Image (cartoon, rainbow, N blue to C red; front, top):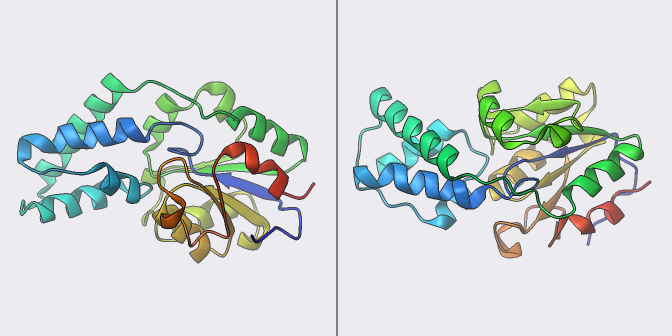
Length: 218
């Protein structure tokens, strides 16, 4: 297992599936929104593409279903997806999230959040007490290229006035891990959504947030 040799200046978290146990609700929303169009999506497909900008994900799913992704159809499906998500979503913060964020804050390490979700969704999903920990939030609608492109994490590092090598990323999905590694950051993956076998590009894979504190030098 790789270990950090130096104390990082910032730890940047993904949101869905890392801090908030929201991935089952994202799956339900995509599944129900696509069903009227005859497109079936699996839980694995949604989890594996987590972090990608919604439009890119939706275009790919529609093309697979042989449906031309016009702007009208894209907007219609996404609006339905958002409605279903808001109706069903119940906020569950992963065990250990509050404690880990507080622990990192006490070590005088900056905190950032990078998510593929739009900013208005971040506002609805994150409790104020959690949101208050982050100096920087980069949402999916604030970048031109989402995960797995490195832009989201590079933008977060720039906003924190840090070099990428001074940041550590906490992720849970292949696209997010690829984004972090392409940005030149050390990446710790937590297997909350997918088995460890799918998270192999990360520098370290853990089973729970409680394991992360001991990996970060004081």
